[in-house]
Image 1 (tube, one colour):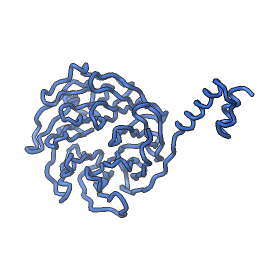
Image 2 (cartoon, rainbow, N blue to C red):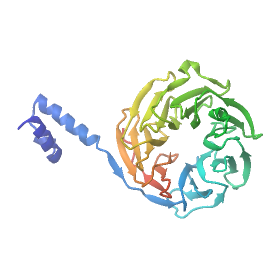
Image 3 (cartoon, rainbow, N blue to C red):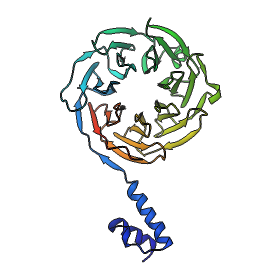
Length: 351
């Protein structure tokens, strides 16, 4: 029997059927790798009907007790995480909610609204604290600094002054005023992420580039070359690893890329043939990356080796937002026109 036939037989019946030889040992290794690398399909453990129109935003509270979702009617809802069912309180703001972010201490919640403004709410009392007007036609991204005192926003503008919208604005949340702007992208900025140390901000753009900025100096980090490298289409999502050494970028070119922050080196490219990647999230331990694609599936990747570990889903529409719970035991995804958020209970992290 030839070796391909032996491999097929071993996959069906087990590697014990292979003869003992150097060639068969190699074949058994291939069989074990095939079994180990088989992609797990996980079914959702919970479904949240979050909107009558559109489910486009979500965020776990830092203490892990709540999942907050945003919908097409401007509705922001609190859902208990864990054994509890039902939902908590809710609030409403003008226009669709397209992004949500908690301050690191969990005291504030920032939301992008369809009316072109960013609203900052008291996460406990649900009182409106600030309304920020970036003076752009729409807001595309936001990110809290790790200290919680600054909020970065980006947006787009259809006016003759559109070039001004290719910048990132840094807001002082004490005064509600702009502290400074970061300029350099050649098109609308579509994604933002602060490094865990708060010194560096990453921005991604429709100009297909990812840039790192010195927040204090308001300047590109020239030691990284300013630009980490070009995707083949819009950069849609960014996230730093928990230790700040790696940056993940998602793009409409159907890939996610992992970059070494210190020198801008491209570690690897992740491609699952799921169409444009619209969301990315690191697990709290930094071992796994979650990507959401236009095919309605979320995928779990091993960061160290780049293996595709599991597929979560599926939605009829693309995955618009993703998050891991702070303890890493739950993943959540928002399904756009599916009007749902799905949650998955994750097994213990395999290496």
